[in-house]
Image (cartoon, rainbow, N blue to C red; front, side, top):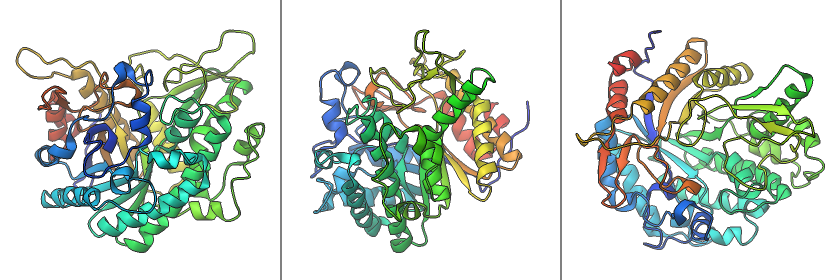
Length: 469
């Protein structure tokens, strides 16, 4: 096995999201989000699960921070619940909500852990969705106001501000396929949401630059590694089309200052993109200190022949509507295993491929892996332990793939395992467990899985092979 050593400056962390762990959905002035509404709608989530209680982090945050400190992690990536700090998405801020995150940030700093705050991890205030949500430009302007409030309150203590988590999911799964909140299936609205999320990123990023100039600025994208089923021109064009929707719709305006021309041409039958106003692309392209990269699995596509049965094995949930706007002639093919409990293929080399592509296209842009991890059907053994060897294998393979990319020049400065805790896994409810720490949802007792001990050793030594031993 190749020896993989990480320097002391490399940042090891873990990540969570507010709606997935906090609970306390109606406490201390928190307003409803689109995920409250969606999860309480019959048939939307597995077993009708909701985030009402989740992992009860709102009441157990000090215990959870103690786990982070005991793991020896240098950073913790959490998200701020917009409806907890600004219940209606505009106007009045809720001091009780701000105070919660202030205590959380102070608790991290007291434990020597860097706070990495994500402003938006999908919990849009419901009132804004009732005014057309991310399909409306006004939501981006409201996000700017929200950013000013939360950065003004916490900006002097937060190490890194991340504007958005996975805007691809917010736009396409929320507004095109409907498998995420708000559950709409409107292709034109999805593309409008793409732009207004990008605009929100730029506006909020400029708020950070103004109000917290010492903080680092980031955004987190779930970038896709897309491969063709063959070397045919048609299959390679299928890759190009999906790459435009999945990756370049965000990388283009954020890092290049413009939308790719082929994306606009591909989707012209759906929208004329008139929601992009003069100067928007310049606003979006706020310089980043670090690009957050989320990676779980890879994608295999081919051009649909127009005759055979369609294949939609894209890993993004079952729906009669597709998240892939104006890509009806692209097939998403099943891939060989092994798979995680999400049905996602396990493909560490694709992470190396992704990081080297980003390094090649944006050589001066530092990166961090802001999410990587796996759900498996964890079992509590007779000895009381959770021997999650498959998760350890997954993490070791992907961290090794990241190390390979670093060895070839990619400027990757940190890694955040997803997730610190088992949690509410969106449409899959509590059936899928991603945590390195198990949560018993009946008692809220936390138990370290073997992967937590493994990750603790890795964070302490920086030696991938020594962690395995």
